Image (cartoon, rainbow, N blue to C red; front, side):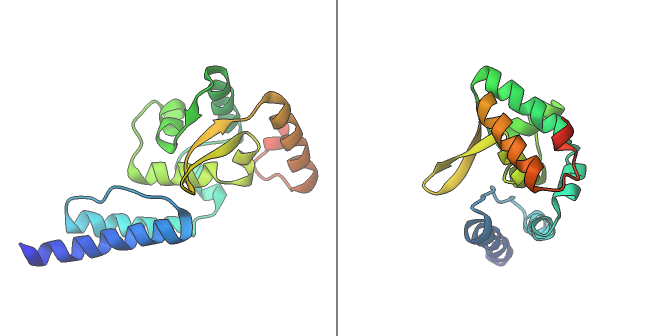
Length: 154
């Protein structure tokens, strides 16, 4: 029994180290070594995934990001990656969906609409910006970036 716990603990520590060192993102470790290894491999692959692929993987467009912002601003609620997925797709997010949503919400495009809320240096949620702040950020973004995701047309 001891031997099977060591690899799982090692993999979970690797996930935690990656998340703490590179991304400040944490995830609960699975109970089985095989699941932990699979999750670790998925996280490693997702770290290098471009934003467009993340948007495709979690089925989120620029219009949906803006819709989530409008909903969060109306309710004056902070969004977590899990609540972001639940708001847009009406289902509980998997660990990878949460991670990809977190990466998306960290992007320049999402920062047009949301600001990070931190706890001890770790991003824990995202707060909707005011309409005026979004208009200014969108104007600046559209002046300085080539917009592949059509956020300037939303």
